[in-house]
Image 1: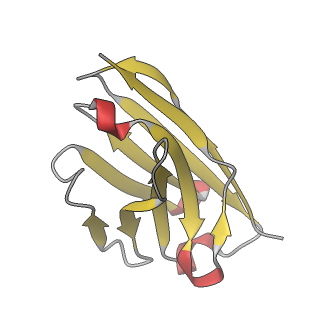
Image 2: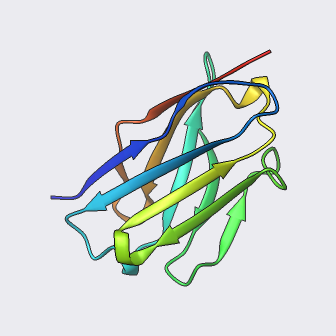
Length: 113
């Protein structure tokens, strides 16, 4: 049974940083592409960043230059370093395994002015 657990969310002021983590279990982690999504209040869920098993990376235009996705296969973990946070980054952030459509429970990020 695949299980994803996100952590690291919280309340920060605009311009500050947060680091999210997602620990996976029940899967051969290194073989899978991984992704971060987010859903802001009243908005649809949107893709934030992806990292493939070969460590190719893509970002949404809205976070390019501010967010960094990484993976640690030894720890079955992906991370999302979020810098220069903006009010519009507020939302629930979800870890995802695209090929099996598996989601974590999400972690709340709130950016205040």
